[in-house]
Length: 339
Length: 259
Image (cartoon, rainbow over all chains, first blue to last red; front, side, top):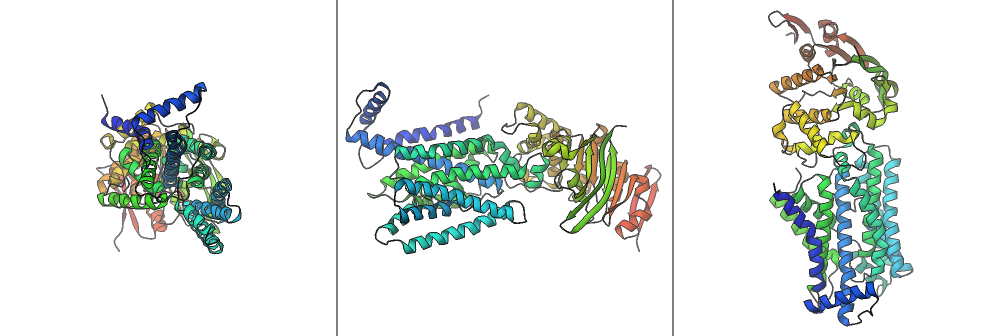
């Protein structure tokens, strides 16, 4: 009676939790098991029973530095992957990334502008989020105005929006103060979770949860959209409306993630492929699996970024260095999970 | 006879280019209608208009007496199954997953298909005789197999009317006949069928009703014998055609004449 596939898949769902625990120990500052257990108990009791909180260095490292960062990695990885998988479905193209509608470059420019004008951490986040959404709205309205229908128009609008915001980002770099602002811009664009605090998680939690929940609820319908407009219509779908809902939700999730992490490439592209290899192409299973694999992948990469060398390696660099070879390997194996 | 489908003075144009106009016909329960006509006459467009995929410029389509405009896409999909000529699946869904998608118009927006839906999908796979393909990826099937899968998916919609867009056009001789036999079987179970075909002879094989679409108009509609005549077929296709009765098979055939 026991289904082998069921067992294996269930185990994968436990992966992020296992990695979360392992990641608490990972880092330059040594934290033995006993310390982690002690600190966990004391934090737990101070939280629930009001006993005085620990003020040790160990406590700070574990719960004020590592844990928020670990949670952010899980959240950002899951967010980029669920939106990447959804975009691939509705654009009927397995090579699409969450940034297809120019969300990445929009958010990047928003952050640049904020660094130039205010250089306040919260405003940078807010501007990145807002400009990510703005990029999507421009792409969608261009698609609506033009006469053509279907996904191709959106892809072309995305290319246009992308190009405009990339140019504006270059302009921002050009006028930035080269000793202060320029490094900040460059560092932000390469992506990092090094400065994440609990309050940042709080800001991005609701857009990511709301967007992901809607995508999750519509996951079976994404299968039908992936058949193409005519067939989806013949199966009773209001194609335009449904596609819009999915685009808006996927963008919401991506923008929120990018606003704390910076633009991190490859995750939203590679993770859905790895997930297809495990559970197949049906979005009913693919979407939850993408979230789990995405969260795990991101956490591992972030652990690497803070341990390989003494200084941080920006996340965007590592995801490309890890993601691209993984992708090449998948192509070579011919196990892409699509034709 | 129960009236199933009524098409009333339907017209369609792509921009300023009219494709067809004033197309009217009706179909009873369990009847098969073969739509004949040359390439580019608008046969596929007509089928898509009836299926609600394309919006006709004027005219209306009634299914079991109800206007399809008031039914909406979901309502149409519960009553009309559409079998496209060919499909291009990007992701390698299994045949069963693919066929279950036909349940979409019957499920609420947030729902995923349940055990009952899977059961219905398996039944319709059995109905068209491809139960053994259930776990195969759709992209790896032969032309005949994927046509059967598409029919099975439309059947899961539990439609009263089935529309087929040149279901035999990419198939070898044997598979063509297999598809026609399936169509006949479905009609005998009470389903009404509208089918585009490029072979006038298919109309004789299926035997009910036929219509000829040519030059943007329905030039003939009625019993097969009255539509598939040598004069009509010669004018529609622009080649000389002969209709002969094969005595021992008790049926007519439509053959091109050698010049």
